[in-house]
Image (cartoon, rainbow, N blue to C red):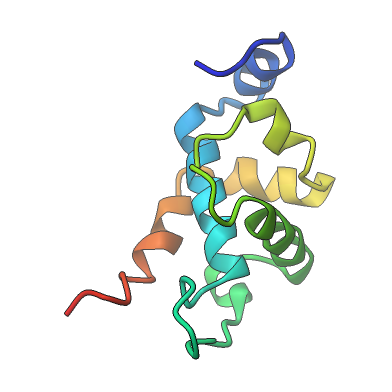
Length: 112
């Protein structure tokens, strides 16, 4: 898809990760960075530990979410991977199948 080098397939195979897991990670990171989804005046304070995200991982995800704030969640795997701390990588691999639940916990703010 967007992997032009040998690093991405190795990462995906070694950790049993798929592009959808990385897209889910970016969407989760975008929410950690801005849980109000850009709506002015909406700045909810979220305890990310309630979502199973340790503080240090949340800090790393916040930086990733800021960088990819307006990006498609389908960024190159190796580009995302190198931005993750070792602790975040472990958390990501352990929680790859549950990441979509974070997004589901934040319904669109403009829906009735």
